[in-house]
Image (tube, rainbow, N blue to C red):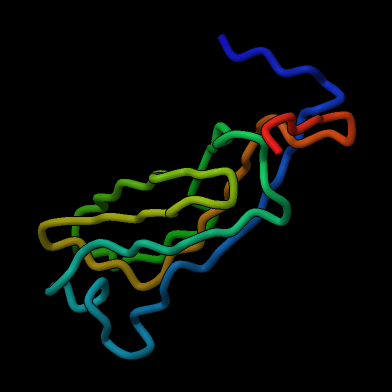
Length: 117
């Protein structure tokens, strides 16, 4: 259980188009090559520690003739940001993807003291 003092709770959120490969016959649309897209997302302000992050698809445009396969996740989270990762495999052809994300965590407070200096 993660307990957050409410006066220190921060919530940041955003939306990001990860790729639009149908426009230029990119790897996700052609079905060949690297089948992973990894994008660094920076928070609007740093958190005190790496936050909990939830990601979801808000738009997924794919070819109707192949099976829909995908994995989306937040990886390598820090206080400043995270990698938003989309993966597909086999013959799935994806034209474009947009993902939404929400980060919840503790933020620095004006009463924090740094006694190490």
